[in-house]
Amino acid sequence: MRRGEARKAGLVKYSDGKPCKRGHISERRVNNGNCCACEIEKGKASRKGRIPVFARLDGLRFGRLVVIEREHRTDIVVGTAWRCVCDCGKVHFASSSSLQKGHTKSCGCYAAEVQAKRSENAARRKSTYRLWHGLLRRCLKEGSSSYANYGGRGITVCERWRVFANFYEDMGDKPSPRHSIDRINNDGNYEPENCRWATPDIQCNNTRHNTIVEFSGKRQSISMWSKETGIPSNTIAMRIREYGWPPKKALTTPVKKTARWP
Image (cartoon, rainbow, N blue to C red; front, top):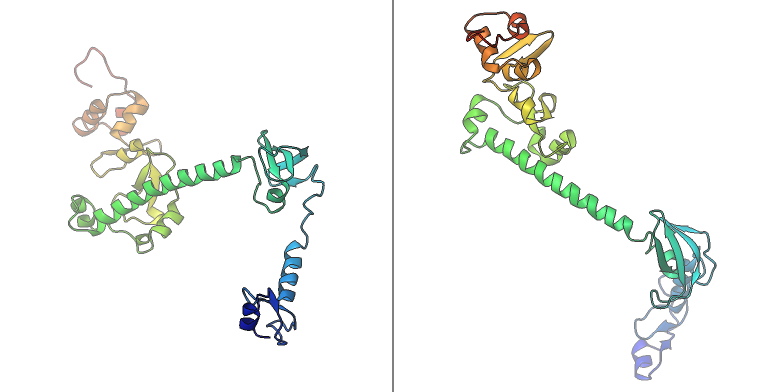
C-alpha cells in the first residue's frame, strides 16, 4: 500500500514492502513517512545509559548539586522533586529529568558567575579595543590631531598589531582603569617588545620632554626623583641645569629652608 492510499483510508501506519535507508522492511508512519523500526532504535539509543526517572538519586552529584532526599513539592517542579545542596551552600529543588538531562547543574550561582564574568570581560575588552583603535589612528591616520606627535615622527604600529586579536593576545586586558599602553623606548614603535601597561606616573616619567637623571643605577625624571627624595622638583632642576651640579650632589644635598638659593 502506498502512503497516499493509507492516508485516504484513515490509517496511522502503512507498509509498502520496501526497505528504508537502514534496510528495515517495516511499517511506516503515514504522517511523516518515517520507519517505525528506526524510531524504536533511536529511542533505545537515547535512553541508553540514562538513569531511570524513578531511580533513587540520593547522594548523587549533578554539577554543583548534591542530592539529599526526595521531596513532595509539586508547587516547585513538575514530576519527582529532589532537595539538593549546592556547593555555594544554598538549598535547591530540582526534578529528576532536569538533573539527569543536565539541565540543572547548580542553584543558579553558576549562571550568575558566568554572566558576571562575560560582562566584566566585555567591558575590559571594549576599553582595550578603544585604546588599540586610538593608537592606530594617531600613528597611521594623517588627519588625526595627534598624528604629528606620533606618525609624523615616524612612529608606527607593527604589522601584527594592526589586527586587534593579535594585540589582545600579546597585551591582554588592562590591569586597571588607570593603566594605558606605554612605549618603553619613547622613539620606538608600538610592538610587543617595546610596550607595557603603565600608570600615569610611570608614563609621565617616560616622555621625550622630561629631563632624565641617572643616579644609583636608576633612570628617572626630575619629578620622580622629587617624589623619592622630598626635594622640590624646581630645586633639583635648578641645581642640575643652572648650577651644573652632578646628580649625586643635586639629589642628596638637603634643602636649606632659610636660603633662597639651593
